Structure formats: C-alpha cells, structure tokens
View 1 (cartoon, rainbow, N blue to C red):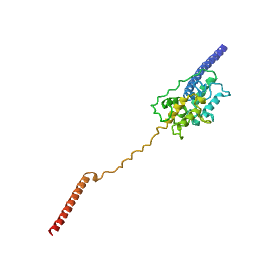
View 2: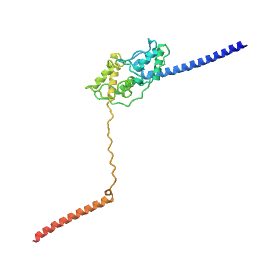
View 3: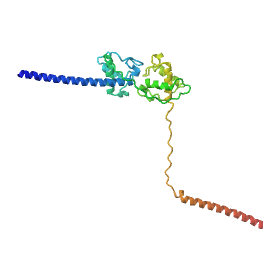
View 4: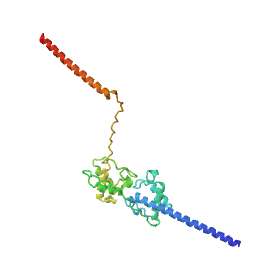
Length: 283
C-alpha cells in the first residue's frame, strides 16, 4: 500500500507539472503572437516602403531570407538599431536619434525572423493617409503637386515626416539654394545621393517610380517651402495713462475760456486800430 500511495503522489505531481507546462506554453505563444502582430504593424508603417510589403526588397534590401549568423536576432536588431553607414539603412533606435523604442525593435526583429523560419507572413494593412487640401501649382514647375502629395505620403513621409519636417531623414520644408531648385530636387529624388541614406527612386536608376511620379513629387516638395510662417509683430499695447482733469469738464471749461480770451483780444485789437485811424482823420 505505501508503494501504491507513493506512485499515486508521483503521478499527481507529474500531472500538475504537465498542466503548468501547457499553461505556460500557451501564455508564451500568446505573448509571441502579440509581439509578432505589433512587429507586423510597425513594419508596415516604417519599413515596407523601402523593403517591400513582403520583405522582397524595393529601394532597400530583401529581408525575406535566412540570416547567416549564430544569433540572427542580434544581427537583425543591431542593423535596425544602428543602421548601416553609407547605405540607405538608417538608425531607427531612439538611442541613435530614431523613433523606435527597445520593445518596438524587439517586435520588429520577431516579425522579420518569421520569414527566415518559414512561418506564416502576417501582413498588416497598408496605412491609410488623410487627404490634403488642394495645392496650387508653382509657376514654371512641371508636375502635379496634388498627385505628388499622395506619392510623398506613400514613399517619403516615413523618413522625412508628414510635412517634410524631418524624421529619420532630412527636413524638406525649406528653401533649396539653387538657380533651378526644381532640377536640384528632381535629381536628388531620381538618382539619390551617393554615400548617404537617400536612395535613387526613379525606375531609370533602379527605383520604383516612373518619370511622371518623380516630376509630381518634385512639384510637391517645392510647395513645402512655399508658405512659410510669416512673422507678424503684435500691435504695440497702448500705454496705460491715468486720465487727467483735462479729459473731463475741466478741459471743456479751459477750451471755452481760451476761446473767449482769444475772441476778446481780437475785438480789442480791432477797435484799437479803428481808434488810431479815427484820430489821424480828426487831426
């Protein structure tokens, strides 16, 4: 009997351990899925514009591949955090001036590595963009700035900010110092800047955008500096002067008195002249 009791106790302990293991595994799986879902959303919002919606590559490298590394998670994380100097891959961690915190980078790493392990690809919905007010074309500049605004939201805002204020890329809401700023901006968009994070976007240079797309983007970028905030000085405040006795009845009485005095003096002066003339006639 003691042996049977001993075996029963061992069985109960093993059953309890199995229950805890299943529960723990379920929690870990749920946590992993939540992290992957977050990574998918962050990828769609920040990375897909360069690396493609499915990690297939666009103006950035392909990510849907195996990472030859003992710790691929550390390699992918370091790349996201620090970027790669001299390439379009910027540093995205807040420690390096980027917008993503440590947990968000962990989620991105987890999502990207699902492609390496052959797991299902969780593609988040493409971000939607609010329509902008109608933009007036700039004279003598080719391209439609309204169509360019939509292209900017889809391709450029993730790096340069929604209004060109700068994010991980340079600020564009500025004046471009050039005799032909339209040609300067168009050349940068079409061909990129060698050795910098700015890739070439025109199809002629291996990018995804057609010639007309580049023209429209150029027209929009130039409008970002068209309406600068104009400094309007505030009207000077009127001095706080206490009213004197002249501002009331005292001023009215003084005015009337001066008027009477002036009129009286004029009458006296006129009569004096008449008297002198009369004396001259009499004499």
